Amino acid sequence: MKRTIWTAALAVCVCTAAAQEERNPVALPPAGGRIYRTEVVPYDARHDAAERNREAGGYWMAFSPRAIAEADGEIAALLGCSVEIPVAWTDGVVLLHIENPGAPCTLWLNDREIAKIDDPLTPAEFDITPYVRQGANNFRLVMLGRRSPLDAAPSTSRPAFENSYLYYQNKRSIRDFEIALVPDSTHRCGILELAIIAQNAFNYDEEVTVGYDIYSPQGKLLDFNMREITLPGRSCDTVRFRPYIYHTYENRWEAGAKNPPLYQVMLFTRRNGVYKEYMPLKLGFGKTELSEGRLMRLGRELRLEKASYNAAADRKTTLAELKALKTKGVNTLCPDYPQPAWFYEVCDELGLYVIDRANISAPEQRDNRAVGGTLSNNPEYADEYLARVKAMYYRSRNFTCVIAYELGGPSGNGYNMYKAYEWLKSVEPSRPVIYSDADGEWNTDL
Image 1: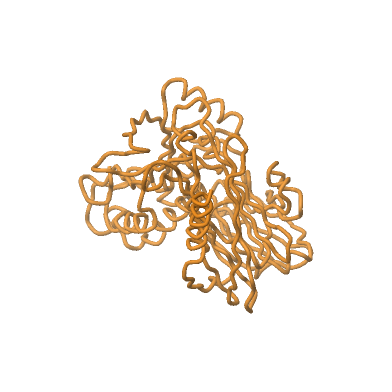
Image 2: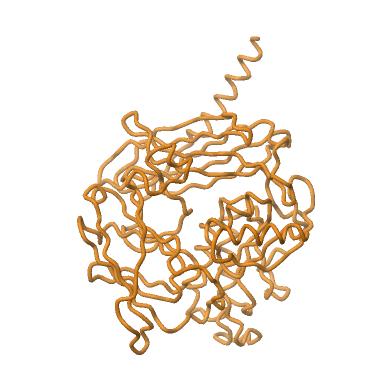
């Protein structure tokens, strides 16, 4: 009995130490402009989060612009809508999520230009806090009649602006997170590697409490923890948790399984004793990594049976098509560009691997290695290449199904692809980064 008590005490100390590491708050970026982070909508109540009831609680509202003017020259269309912003939202952080606009566009709000969207196939989020006001807010989207030379051919059949919305967060909230359930060093149990980025958008010091709980695929509570930190004004900081999760090898997530087990994780904040801002997640156990040129998962080499696939018009159709592919022996999907969040959720639920690809497709003069000969070796496009790779990575990094990243479709090689590879490897040390047009050069792992 005494030994059990000491063991439990030691485990608590280990978890506490992991959560109480030295902190280095960093300044929040200026409000306004595009942000890169995981796509998760906060919920005001736990039961609404469990049911994915986004309309409840007043944190979310749909964004559905409509045509208001005909095409004129380079402008393909002018879209717009008026959105009523409640007074409560003016005292927080307001974000706009735009998905599947159909073409590059310029976003205006209340007669101010606030963003350019060059990549219409990758969902984008914008901090519009400085531009919104209480009451009616007028949004305008100037749709351009041209495509970026980096765009993959648009093959999506999904409705325009599907899953586009505005949402609200308190100034003390979860800005982003990174999560994985991976083997421990003994390969006997799992470790929940969770990093929650807390933010304080006030101009003065504030206490922020963030936490989580995790349930087994069978519905048993396995761990619960939270941590309070004090953040300086206009700053954010990372709180890390690394608890041991036992019996994970009995619930390993593998492609091809009939019912791949998924753990239920809930992130949350707490203010004045009240729990707020619930963020629901599903997570599989396992880790994909490169070992001596082989793609490994839980000690076994992966044998990939690949198929090119982009999401269908809706989740139901996509689910049916993916089930059919799975029955044919396909275990790995290779989309042409980043997909909607529900696509990765379906792959997690079905047990299908995904090699996620940035929306970069510039095959013209791909064999011309002179500076500027191919867009991939034209430094003028370096920022756009990196922006597309970052947007892909931050949206899909927390899905279990994603086992590798691809820099883009066949687009030649050069400076821009080198920089994109270096950035991805700096933030993703485990999963491989691949590029078919590396042509024997160093910027691909497979």
